[in-house]
Image 1: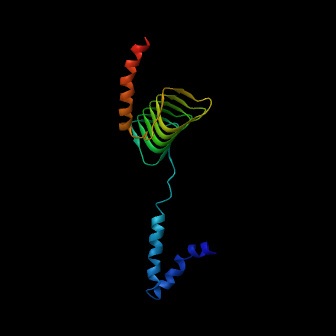
Image 2: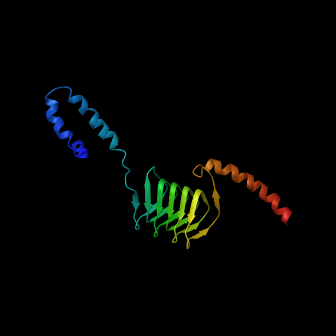
Image 3: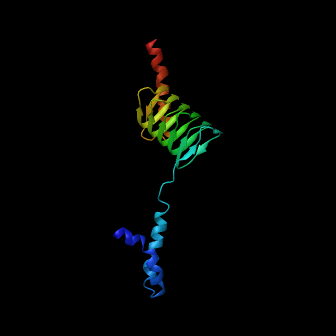
Length: 171
């Protein structure tokens, strides 16, 4: 009952608006509330089809599903790499789901390699899941803020400096 009256509110307000000015005042907040609610729904993911080949970088604050091939870096909120997709470049997203092939570094808060994934490169993550059957060649590094490459360079420099000192001791 209540939802029906809310849906039907705009229709009765038109006749009421003709009567007194008090009906116009409640009518003004209702459309503004509706306009504020309109941009909130999340748009669907952009899909790059399997017959599409892109050379260049892609950057969005939204979601992308790649089925084709990309030679360049990709930055998105949610990135889904399809089984037929091939990415040659760095991938950065809050959530990364890999079903296809990536040659390059992967950065994400949540990274998931499915059983059909093939990754050749380093993965920098906050959380990671690797399904049985996934092919991964590279290193895995956990960071609290993997999306910020500036922080990755500082910790990486310290272990790199310590690594040569360790090699001569072992030989």
